Image 1 (tube, rainbow, N blue to C red):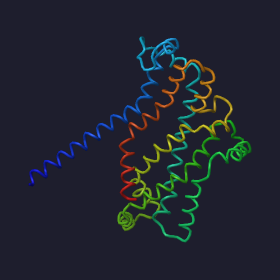
Image 2 (cartoon, rainbow, N blue to C red):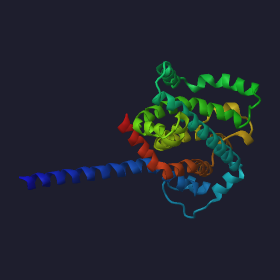
Image 3 (spheres, one colour):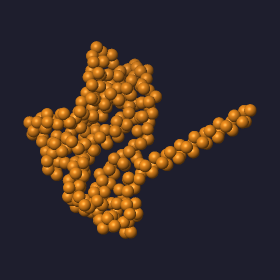
Image 4 (tube, helix red, strand yellow):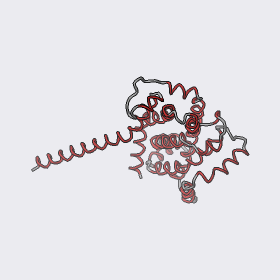
Length: 284
């Protein structure tokens, strides 16, 4: 009987694994199909794109479309996007961690009201703040500079970051922090030497999530900048689309170059992302 039961369990496991592989392949085709189409189209000439099949590989692989994108000033937008992403993400994660630490580890009278206010701030649509933020940027003389983009990127991603990190830090054992305090660490030292390092998985998850949001931000870039020297990649896609309306391969080459940094960020950070999600799921 035990042998028959074991055989049935192995059969069920094999069926489950085969089903999982099948659906994984289907999902890979659905998710990878558009990216495959982007790459193929970006390597075609305009004439070959208009006359050939959509998913047919190009007869001659050409990088001419990428050359046109670079000649069109792509590097201006790319450098601005890197600067805005790096500064915004660094400040955002640091401020989020500093705010989440007292909300998750300390008891004080205004703890719950402050946390409720942060949660409520997550429901504010960014579009209703465009005009006030624009007026503020003009009054501060930072309009049409990349500095005008830093504040909105940090402010509007801060509530959800604090919310997630607070829940994450609540799952860290208090005994570890108490042991550090016995060794002579104050709250400040305990945060930077114990809690902050133990929150790396959560910070990595937020870094990838917020990185994608900041990298693709369009509304504030459109409203708060005017010249090429201050604009980021989402505006490059918009401007190139107007310039190369009929030249689809050039647009596809621009999209590949624009999405490549985020794809690489996910590839190298996916292990930390999965660990952060699993840790949050277990601790929640």
